[in-house]
Amino acid sequence: MAVRNRNESQPIETEALIEERDTSDTPPSESDNEMLDIHPSVLTQNNWKKDQWNIGLLLFLYLLQGIPLGMAASIPLIIQTYGASWSQQATFSFAFWPFSLKLLWAPIVDSLYSKRFGRRKTWLIPVQYAIGFVMIILSFYIKDILREPAAATATQHPHIYLLTIIFFGLSFLAATQDICVDGWALSMLSRENVGWASTCNSVGQTAGYFLGNVVFLALESKDFANVYIRAPLHMELQSTGLITLPGFLVFWGVIFTMSTTLVALLKHETDERYDPSEPHFGLIQTYRVLLKVLRLPAVRSMAVVLLTVKIGFAAVDSMTGLELIERGVRKDTLALLAIPLIPLEIFLPFYISRYTTGTKPLNLFIKSHPFRLLIGLVMAFYVYMTPSFQNYDKTFPWYYYFIAVIIYGIHQVFIYNMFVSQMAFFAHVSDPKIGGTYMTLLNTLSNLGSSWASTGVLYLADFLTWKTCSLGGGKCETAAEEKNCGMLGGACRPSIDPYYIIVTICTILGFIWLIWKYRTIMNLQSLPMSAWQVRSDNPKYKQLENEE
Image (cartoon, rainbow, N blue to C red; front, side, top):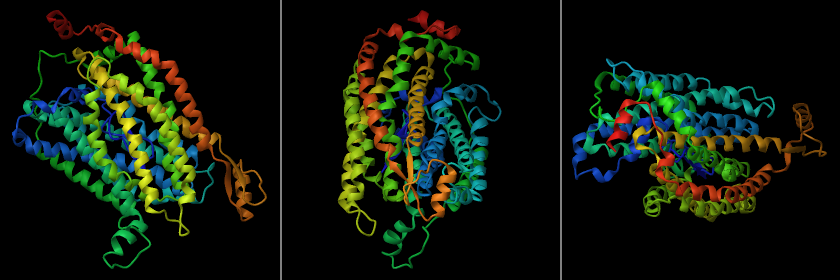
């Protein structure tokens, strides 16, 4: 099952039981968060036709953004099938950090540009070319890089750092492209249609993520291709899937380069929504405002909450999918289990938003926290029982997957309860005089809380892994001991599974956190709006204050 990581940005987000990762919930740029204040209710019937070509372009640009994110999310599943260790998974988890850090360079992208070429195209065109070229070049080497774990011990894997650097770079480029497209959306669409910007973001990025993760893993699997495509069509069964990872990289690399060339030549940029009466901060001013926001006592208290709240969920979100693969569930099957839940993920935010209006939206957040911890224990028990469901031919019955969808669906309900209520609170307390910068900062803190907790538990899992040789019960703590065990015809296997230990530890810490921060969260909701506001040296900001 794939658990999509909602970077209290995005998408989602994701993956079936793999850390929630992406991309549509992560609003790290100023322009990205401005879209959160725009509601579809401002649209009039059929007025979208006025901007139908621009809407189509935005959908396509966001779809392109989701491709490298989906591919990056598939890598942990792939390297797990090669026997990657927990420390290697932890190392690769850094590849997902750029969307949690893009606030650091978003002001640069928004402030430094060539007026002749266009404010957004200055960055968008070279960034998309870079993504395309990296994909094409990577296609020639990716097989050798991924195949390495089969021949190397967990402690001697020489390519995991290279793999992490490559996908960190792709995520960095995708995050920068996100900043560009978010800002361009606000000027590309007419004022009455600007509400379509957030829709394009959500739909386009989710579609791209789906193609780069679920569709890729399914079509790359020989089992899926043989059972569901070749056999029904009476085609010859083969030892490979319908597509390969190198071929997939080349295809999308070419799409990136060709589409970027067309955008550079045919699409002209205008900034129709610039309003001189609104505060527009320069590069230095933006960073100064961020520092002033961070000095507010209310924001500092909220920062502690956001940076620590994910501790209780980190083990379940980051390790469950990998544990299922270890127990025989195919990676393509995990990805496909996300499909039945798509309607639920679309419906939930609309339904939950009815309960997050008012001055205390975090009530739902705090009420959902213990239930999310408990459903995590149910997931761990499900993982424990997985071998008992397995058939003699290593497959699983349909009701095993049905149970998985039910459990994951309930899990998603509590995830969305916390996410939507958190976003509603951010929108409530953010100082509108600072544009999207304030809300972007809060989302960045939330995303960082997810990233460090996920990486931390994966490293902890490696530390708590004790292996013994299947022949003689000797230790397998070093590379030499693992090699000796293999020479004897044995295999190094965990004597104690760290997954259950870490899930238990995280759950206990989660309940301790709830007791520790419950009163803090309730108090933060009761603070006056003045406690969240910051004064700025920007003259336009002062003008707005005087008008109030």
